[in-house]
Length: 77
Image (cartoon, rainbow, N blue to C red; front, side, top):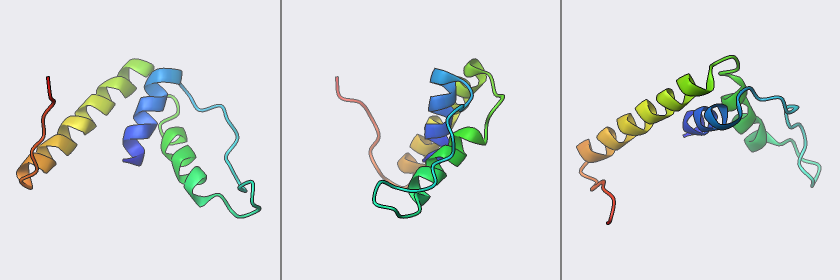
């Protein structure tokens, strides 16, 4: 799911220009924030259009896996 988020952010905003999070407000190492940041920063240089296509491909693959596992996937109208 981190890669979905990375492709989504890259598709919306382009390259990640924010500093990598180090600490939380409580003074602990921000491992979750670093993981999210790494997912987005790891595709730096990818065009917004390519990122949007990769996002769509990844979501389609996730939906195929869910259907294969017997989970109903669909949208209510």
